[in-house]
Image (cartoon, rainbow, N blue to C red):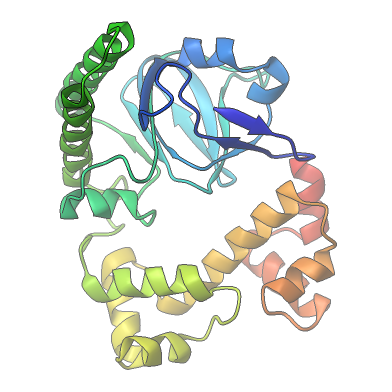
Length: 297
């Protein structure tokens, strides 16, 4: 991983110190803590790669996009590129004492599997607390990846076959994750709804220019009512709620990791008046933009 400094959030780019040309790395949480400076480990960071964390023991709390996630044995975290995180920490804010394995991989490393795409597209859950059966299956799959990666590190002349095997093992692990039930039974019961996913992808491209359900429905060739029904079935939230939540998340990210004035952030997200942006942010987060920024720093 390569760090690039900003004032509060550190951008971390994928950089495999063992095999620079391999798009996956397997390491323990202890190894990661040793690699990072303590000042970096305690600060929020934003990744340009995927990070899977499977906790085998210990306790801590991770922050992902300003939501706290308790970490204990059986916790699975999946961080997507662009998300803001703080490494699992203890009550004092220091990196937690966890027995955990991390899989870091670039967006183009997994094999092109439809089931894996649903895990990788960024619209699924961030954290699961796995029951023993699911934890055992994922732990075994992860251990096999660890073993193959260790063999890759040890090989003087690694072969393409080892890289291909790692890619397929990762694909199998992602399919196992795709089979997991949603952490909240009411969340995302229809995980492969085409219209909902098409909307989420269009929202990622256009959230800074429009939050209008009518605009998105027109682009997708359906009625606003049909689009809202699809979003409710897939997530329990309306299309308008999803659009507003995405804009609020971007506002939080910009407030946390840039020094841009609040008014500038609001204009960049489609609000012509700072007061309208302030009211929107309070409604979505329960805090004013200034209070949120001060809390993060």
